[in-house]
Length: 521
Ligand code: GLN
Image 1 (cartoon, helix red, strand yellow):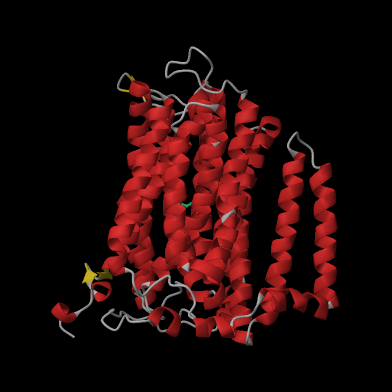
Image 2: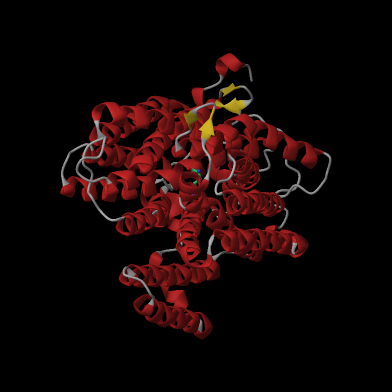
C-alpha cells in the first residue's frame, strides 16, 4: 500500500505508528503535571508561616511523610478500578480522556488557596491518574501487532516522554514557586495537563483502532461479574484462601503498629478482595495457555514490587541523605537537592534508546533477552547501584560528609536498571494479559509499583532505627538474590509464557484496521 492511501492511524513516523507520538506527548504533559506537583507536595505541607515561598500547611515532617506515602501508593493502586472501568465499560481511549479531564480539574483545584481545595485536589488527582496511567500504557501496546519486535522499543520511546515531562517539570516548577508562590506552581501543573488533553483530543484520528470499548458481540462472550463471583463457591479451596486472607488482613490491619493503622486495615482488606478476584478470573480463563500466562504475569509482579521497593528510596531516604550528608558544593555553588532527582530523568533520556538497542541486538543474536530476564537483570543492576551508597556512608563516617559522585553513580545504575525493567514490564503486560482483562492487568502492574513505593517508605522509616548502612546493604543483598533466583527459574517461568515472545519480527502497520483485539490471544 503506498503511503498516500494510508489512513492517519496507519501512518508511521521514524518507524513507529504516529499514534505513539500522540500518546508520547499526552503522557509527557501528564507526567509534567504529576512530577511538578509531586516536587512541591511535601515541602508545601511542612512549610510554616514565614517560609520564603509563602506559608504552606505547617504540618510536622511525620504527618507530611505519611500523607505522601499514602498518596503515592493510592495514585497507583486506583489503577485497578481504572483498568476495570476501561475493560468493562468505557474502553481505554475514553477512560484516558476522562482521566485527563479529572486531572485538569484536580490540579486546577490545588491552585485555589484553601484547605478543602488541597484535599479535594489530591482526591481528584488520585482518580485522574488511576483512569489515565494504566490505560494510556495499554494503548501503546495496542499500537503493535502480536509478535512485532518494535513493541519494546515503542515502550522505550514512550518512557522517554514520561521522563521528559518529569525533567522539565522538576526544572521549572521551583522557579515558578519562587516567583509567584505555591499555588502558581500547582496551577502550572494544571495548565500542563490541559496541554496534554488538547494533544490527546487532536490526536484521536491516529488512534481510531486502539483502546475502543468491547463490541456488542464481544460483550456477549464476556464473562459476567456474576459468573466470576459465582466461581468462588464452586471451589472450597479458593473460598478458604480468600476467607483466611480476609481475616488475616483485618487482624493485621487493625493491629499494625503506627498511627495510620486503619489505613493499613483498609489496604489489606482491599488487597485480599483483589486476590480473591484474581483467583476467580483465573478459573474463568478459557484455556491452559491463558491461565499460565496470567499466572506468570502475576508472579512477575513480585519482581516489580521488589524493584520499586528499592528504587523508590530516591524520593525518601536517598533524598534526605543528599540533603543532610552529601557535600553538594560544585565550583562554589550549592547544588539543590531536587536536582539529584532530575539525574534519573536526564539519564533516561540519554540512555533509553541505547539500552533498548542493546537488548534488541541480543535478541536478534538469539541470546537470552526475554522480558523476565531483562526485568531480573534490571533489578540486579539497580540493586548494585546501592553499593555506591554504601561507599558514601563509609566516606561520611570517616570524613563527616560524602562526595556527590556516589549519588551520580547510584542514580546511573538505578536508571540503567529501570530502563531494562520498567518499559519492558509495560510491554510484557500487553503481550501476556488476556485481552478481556488487558487494562485490569495493567492496573495491577501499577498497583504493584505503588505497593513497592509503600515498601520503600517503610524501609525509609526503618533506617531511623537500623541506620542507612544496614538498609543499603540489605537492599543490595535482597535485590541481587531475588534477581538471581528469577534467572535461575527462567526456564519454568518462560514455559508458562507459552512462547508469547518467540518469533518477534519487524512489522508495519499498513493493515492496522482492527488488529488490536483480533490479533492478540
Ligand atoms: N517513573 C515512571 C512513571 O512515572 C514509573 C512509575 C511507576 O511505574 N511507578 O511512569
